[in-house]
Image 1: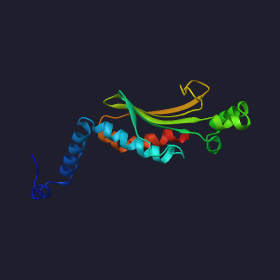
Image 2 (image 1 turned 180 degrees about the vertical axis):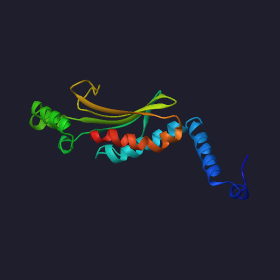
Image 3 (image 1 turned 90 degrees about the vertical axis):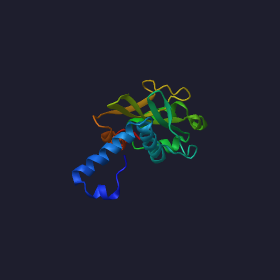
Image 4 (image 1 turned 90 degrees about the horizontal axis):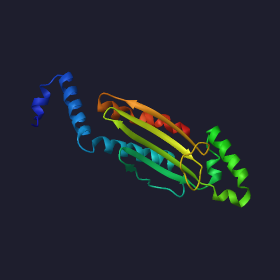
Length: 172
């Protein structure tokens, strides 16, 4: 039932807040609500963190309950400008193994994602993988960070998902 403007004026601030909260929860609990939120946030983070000269307008991918965005940095010189000292050391080592013109063949895969663990828990993650061409996130050829977000109200997920993604993106 839709309330008229006059009926909203008769509600207290607390009643209005509860009404808005309940409507937002209903929207998130509808089929595809949480997934739409994850896709929206991940695609925004892809724009901020993953776009390269070769990868633009990155779209979210998903399989079961895992949602992610990814790109490949094809320019090792650009990758060497990243602030992450652990990754930089590994890339320098990789360049030494592939000297000169061979270093142009080095590619680095960047991934940001969120996996739905349950109705009240998600795992936000980011990964840098320099194991070209397999990119299987094997130990010694990738660096991964993750943060679990536990919530009893989907509004908490809506309000904090981007913050948790920001935390894991410090890897870049």
